[in-house]
Image (tube, rainbow, N blue to C red; front, side, top):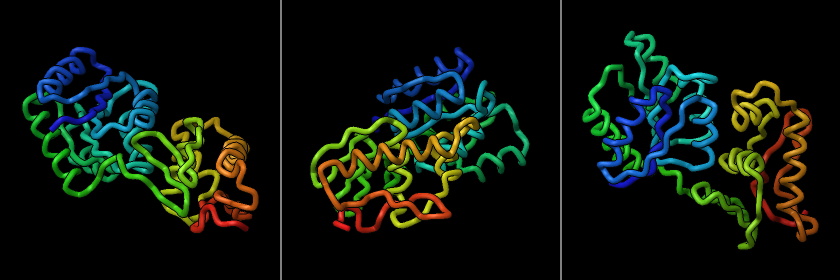
Length: 233
């Protein structure tokens, strides 16, 4: 079972060992060494599974798990030197699918990865789903957006905001919720930054489509994707 796997591990030797074993299984492996890079790479490359070390610089693995789980169902395997039951339960409560304590057997790790991939496939938890709302299509694996069959080019942040909204059409998200899901650990983002991205997103989605509205403002709340995206208003 070949898969795209992201390994977030700041220990160079451990990361190299994990890569060797996973590539022997025919997988495509990417490695990052800190939490911030893990979030960015997961959003840009849409891996099939993430092997995530808890103790990493910049942003720890638990925060990375929380951020990614809010916007994706990608399977996550946590690695940690913390062996207490409380630590394990915390990781699972944040959305991790499995948990291994260090030191661990690389062979056991690859076996658990195989099991998680099988479970994800059986449950349909893939990152290749196309979100369709009205005449709007958001392909989360190909990083593509189409309106009435025509491609629309978005920036990374615009795409991330649209993915959040398209995941639950009709639900109103506050600016704070959008910041948490899209920007995650970056606490310096202002609400007007979200407004600016949404303004650009609207302009691109509605270009040449007079009277249509995709992203609606919910006054006193935030933004939502219209259930009837693309309908003339």
